[in-house]
Image (cartoon, rainbow, N blue to C red):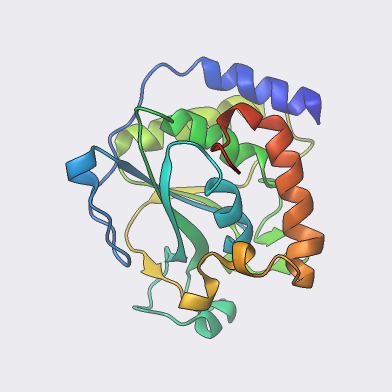
Length: 214
């Protein structure tokens, strides 16, 4: 695992530019223009895990769990869980590029889930749990594709990366009970046995990127 993280870091360092993400977010609105914030949209399986991880990063201003990439407007959680809406569970991440770059967010993305399992993360199975990056502009697309290709060439993972890299088209905020789920339900079994161990590993690797007090 340490060698994987090392190669990911080396690949990340080779990137030399930052990105300009869209300011408009469907679902929950955040004023990016005034603050020069940018937006990333990632799916790493269950959005409870994704949210809990990215909320801890210094420079991340908000993380909203929701649904993206499907064809049904304003889907409910139950509808998404059928796998018939085309949506993935994702997090809409608003961040300050002066503090944390899109490159660094990608580094976290590739490190905190298994991007080689198609439509699955652990026991969570279905297209809604697919590994996915929804890019907001061409620069995000270029960075994501380059990083994915470099990881595959380096043989970092035992199997090919199957992460979907698609244009951002929509985002629908998930129900209120999904927001800040881990923070409010740490004793819940899924949180205790799945999210907490993942967070501990993440915090060891990215301890220099964690917000103070977290």
